[in-house]
Length: 242
Image 1 (spheres, rainbow, N blue to C red):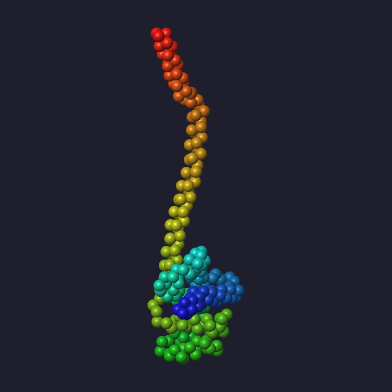
Image 2: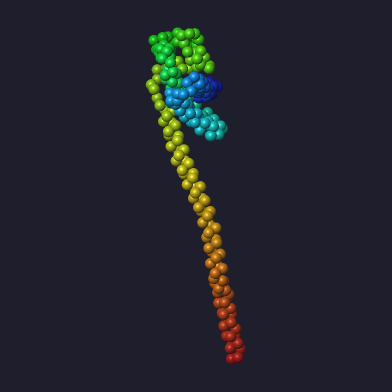
C-alpha cells in the first residue's frame, strides 16, 4: 500500500517536475536568444548548469545502475523509499527556486507576482485559487504548461524551507568519487597490461639462453655414461681375479 502511494509521488517529484522546469527554461532561453540574438545567454547559465547537474546525477543513479538493483534497494531497505522521496523533494525545490530567480531576472513584474504567490499570510485556499488561475495578473500564460508550472513554482516558494545547495554538493561529491574510481580502474588495467608484457619477455629470454648453452643438456647424460663405464671396468677386473 505504501509503495502504491510513494512510487507515483517519487516519479512526479524526481522526473516529471524537473523535466517540466527544463522545458520551460529552454523555451524562455530560446525565445530570448531569438529576440536578442546579439546578447549572450549569461543570465541563463546558472539555471541551465544546475539543470545539467541534476540530470547528470539522475542518469548516474537511475540510468547507469540496473533497474533491478535500484528497485531492490529502494523497496527492500526499510524507509529507503521515504528517504529518497525526501531527497528528491529537496533537490527539486532547489531547481524551482533557481528557476524562480531566473524568470524574475527576465521581467520585474515577476517579483511582485511571486511575492504574492509566496505570501504566508494568504490562506492556502486563496493561494491555490490564485496559483491555478490564468488571467492578466499572473504569469501562467507565459509558460508551456500554464497553471501547472505556476502551481509548482509558487508551491516551492511558499513552503517555509531554508535555501539549500545540496544539489551542488551532491554533484561535486559524485564527480570526486567517479574520478577516484576511474583512476583505480585504470591502474588495474595498466598493471594487468604490464604483467602480460613481462611474461612473453621472460619466456623468450629463457629460450634464448637454452639455445646459446646446449652443452648443459648433455651434462646429466655424460655423467651417467661415465659412471656406467667405470662400473664395467670393475666387473672385468673382478672376473680376471677369479
